[in-house]
Length: 370
Image 1 (cartoon, rainbow, N blue to C red):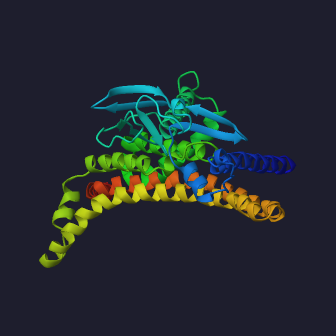
Image 2 (spheres, rainbow, N blue to C red):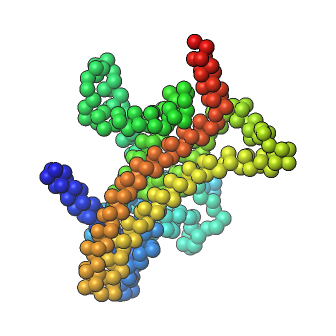
């Protein structure tokens, strides 16, 4: 018990340090820009929060005064008028300089002419490796390393041995997805979909956990990321359908003809509503969690601007709430990965529901015969 208590205290202390470092970076960014005129701008909580949850062409970890821990990322641009252009985001000097005929305006790159004005006629296609993309690559690497490491335990050399190390932590999760997500919703076809369900679950989970680290990208809070996952699930769902499913869509059984005419467009719309629900649920929950945490921490700087004593006096309360929400967010990271995976399995199961029930009924009849 004592060891667990010490561990909990260390985790809480580490969380506080990470929160302070991460938010102090945003506070310094919020105050930049006014020094050139001899005036110090106040802390803009809205700007700091939106900057934190938005994508960027550079990976900003934290700031200490005028020193910034920044990882420049590659900028890859294509313009029909100017051709392909590849360079480091550091060339923009944090948005203060133009380079090679381009300008970074609030992480939106535009073409500029020789006079330094935005060239509206020039089309720019941005294929840059932003921090969201870089973190997704990192998540893929971590996912592959974890799964290949666990898979090696099930080879002939590891057969018969008790689970150990990472295998001991991952195996219960895999079993949970199989027994509580795949089997109940997919029946005898669950093995066919297990690779996809496990990939979706762990990919979302890893990105959710990475997103809780100060300076990390808010990948699962990006609507483009959740939309892509929803589209992939939508494709899997469509390829899992059968005649029984489309029969219920275009000619719902057991209802009068006038009602059928009303239900057909509703049922067709429901096909697209399902992936949309997957997309919005994950995006909204993860974005809201980041905003709540940063809002509590920002209160310290807001009160500090009005009264330094009040700001420091409110700090323990704000940090307590921040750590509490931070711990809740860790739980939400697992819950949202589970919900997305579970709903995907439910929708796939509904796609061949008639076939599933037919096989079950046939199984019961066979059992009665024997």
